[in-house]
Amino acid sequence: MRNWVLLAALAAMAACDRGQPPPTAESVRDTADQVGYNITMDLSIDGVRRIRLQADTVFNYQASQLAELLGLTVEFFGPNGELSSTVTAEEGTYEFRTEDMEARGDVVAVTPEGRRLTTEILRYSRASGQITGPEAFVFDGPEGQHLEGDGFQADPEFTDVTTMRPREGRGGVER
Image 1 (spheres, rainbow, N blue to C red):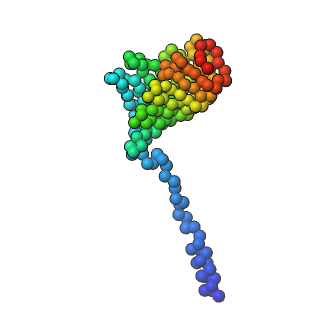
Image 2: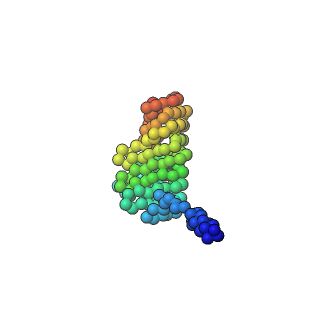
Image 3: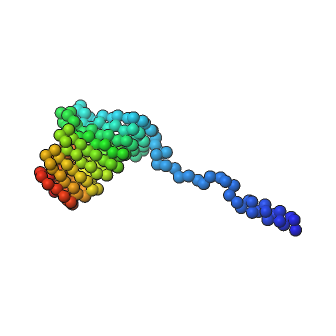
């Protein structure tokens, strides 16, 4: 009888978890080919700086030609090199092939003239030169312009801001 009790106790111990940690999922950021900190990158067209991208942390993925960015600041420059707008966000994505970019999380875009647009997602298309956003936004201009809506399209200077789904607006801003 003692042997059966001993065997039952051994079998129960063998069936118990030995305290090994469970398998963990691999984070997408763990698969980055390169990680950089406090990075600044200038993009030029015909020898003129058009975009300056700064990030606290960059996760670079060579196969997909993407970079994930944390603590993002992007400055857009006009054809003569003058600052046209500055965008800040918590994070973003930059695609090296197309030079397209997306900013996400507490996105704020301001111009030297005092135009200001806030949203959660802002996308820049290099091919069209347009800035768009699918989310709710608020735009305020220096002369009392105000526009709120869901989704927008704008130029990098924010002189032409339009929305298909306005909520509120006044003064010189297209809806």
